[in-house]
View: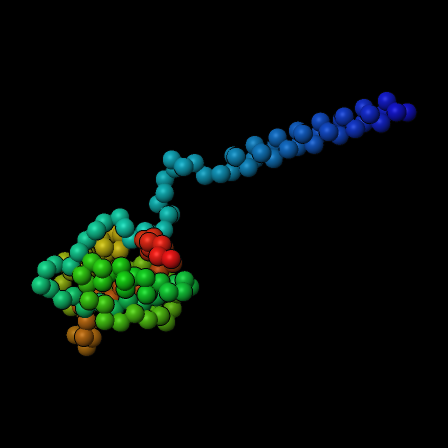
Length: 152
């Protein structure tokens, strides 16, 4: 009777061991390959260090169209560090998945600079003379700010 119980315990241990190995193999098989295409990665702001041209005041409005709190504030600091004049930073009316830079004053080269400063964001031209600004930045859920230094 004792040998039977011992054999049964060994079989159970072997079965659990095999199940554990199968679980590890499945976990490792479902992990993404670090060398895989990363087109779905969020945009990180530090890719290109584009700056505003010297002596030019580019007025920018930043709208947070994501559910991330404080994203417009972080983008404002990022753009101001690069010489752009952010005149307002607020929440957008609707949520967006992707970030967009909109040229409002007919200066597509300025809009491209802002797009590059934000990590290669797409640019559209929608001139609007009723606005007293040059560029509108609509931050979507895909935009991530650069890491901030730790200041205790």
